[in-house]
Image (tube, rainbow, N blue to C red; front, side):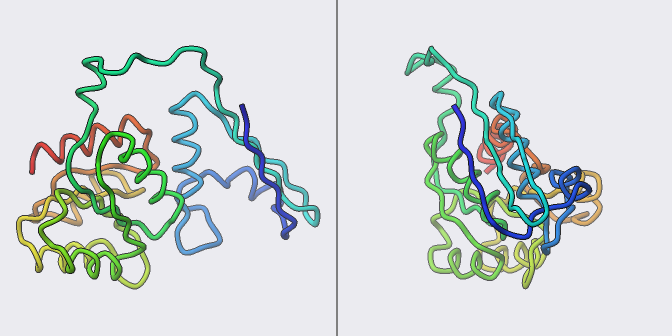
Length: 205
């Protein structure tokens, strides 16, 4: 099975096509959307093909593996993977935010999406006791992850927060030295890595 998209925009040259899935390579403020997308596709056995010619638009094909069997419902593995509670997912990249939210909803979580730090503080402030976990990106315009975390913890000091970033965990640990966090999820992440990190963070909370 495949899904194909085509546009009639300015297209990409060869160098851009070769680097388009690299973390932080982007003509925008941040560039992890495509990196996260290809990571998720590969984790499910899929692939992405890109054709682009300057002046002729770009075609992107998402290739999904076929499956003739479905796992039985109600197995022990299913029970362990089921989530419970409310997650506030905060990321300015819509592709990353929406995919993470969809994956968590599949595991039984209720998810609210925050478009950026300012939006997250507003949403959280309206119902501070609702969220059992905040999944928070660190690199955002207007209000970055560090500022957002400080504002959220000002509203509720015991808030359970799982940080996510394209930076490695050692760099993030140095940035947040002495400040409590419930875990770290490095981008790009697979569905399994997301479930594992969220599950561990929820148990900590």
